[in-house]
Length: 90
Image (tube, rainbow, N blue to C red):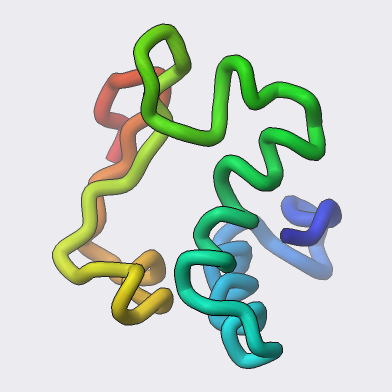
C-alpha cells in the first residue's frame, strides 16, 4: 500500500482502489488484503496493536456484504460498516 494517502493527489477515499491495482499487478486477493492490513502494520512496526483481529489488539475492521477474498473490490462498496477501536464509526 502506498504511503502518500491523504494528499490532494491521492485522497483517502481512493486507498481501497490500491487493492484492485495490486491484484491487476498479479497479487492474489489475499495478498492484497494482507498488504493493506497486517503487512502495513508490520512495516510500520505497530503489528503488536494493529493489522489483525486478535485479543489485545485494537479492533479496526470493515463489515462488508460481499467477500473481498472472492472480489477485492468489495472493500469499495458504499454500504459497508466501519469499526475503529471496536466502535462503529459509519
